[in-house]
Image 1 (tube, helix red, strand yellow):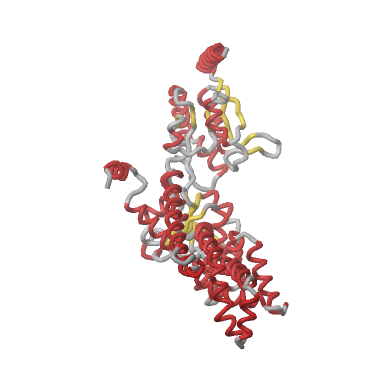
Image 2 (cartoon, helix red, strand yellow):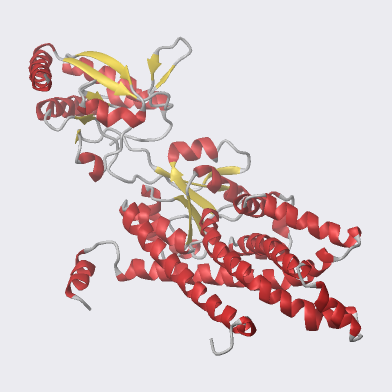
Length: 240
Length: 250
């Protein structure tokens, strides 16, 4: 370790082993929350996106309304409504639901999942709708039924078109998760807020946490670039 | 020109300072309203615990006092700019402030209070009984520090930015008990049905002091002497009992 870093680490009062552990625990909570909401959100979004492309308005209408509501309101408000709203329901404290929603983690997970699922639904829908007609006509000519067309032709090509937009959604979700700290979850931002208020050192506490988010974002960007390279291999020039 | 203004203001400051030493004209700043410490009554008269204490203090010091109303943000700058000489507006003594102003000895300290639902019957000082309970505090307050240091491994601590959010979670039964600045708890928790005080108030922090300019060390000595007399001769207690049902004396 370079001398000046070692010296700085010895001199500073804020970044002791204890506070570094608090940041670490916060990072684990953030990743836990973001990972789960993204995975569940994606699993929900694929069928919803397919329903959203169906011509029958009684099928696509409710999905449209859902994405409209969740994309039309701030995530912070959604979190407030779910976290504080649920606690106001008469008698909920006596039901088994309260075991789940008493802790701030699950209301936050629910809000984040519903939010990211709404955005992801629209991303995938866009990709499905823009499938070239020729591909679908060719599939029909081969005698594929709707289900097989979806599985073999539409969804794989839609996934390739959606991956770039989806990588943005993942990064936005990581950053949006910072608001979990307003409902007492000690995520990365929550840890930074606690440390800030203990030492009255806003710059140190928040610049450090900003660097943590940047490092996480960098890893995500790198991973998605690998994924894109893999999925879009066929578009690269030969010998390129 | 700038130099002349500077020289003139220095001279003025000297004259003002000299006059103050002889006739003891003191200007005291309050930020109103902050009930019950300083506020205006129905007739528009300035009153409250700190206002009455200031009046008694001025009498004790044989000073001719003028009360100035100043918004909180401009308190310390106004003091340093000589718009007034003393701040008696519930300013807690902190190391950060002590670098810019001179504090008297503390003259009051509101305790932290334990508040919870009627059904809460645990002794908050009994660490075995408190094990696993969820305690709400306001982030960065002296109450937060106290719970973190004394009950850190025992209870689950939830930290809130505002007292309102914390009380919502107490009502929603996400918190078993909250530990807040007593007057705040009195206003926000006790005013609701089904809640009560669940433990003895705890005195925390260094308390509230009179703030003066760093150079006014002689004035600070006189203030300290006057406050000490008031605390001893019972005047302080009489005023305190008028406004508070609990002890805030320091």
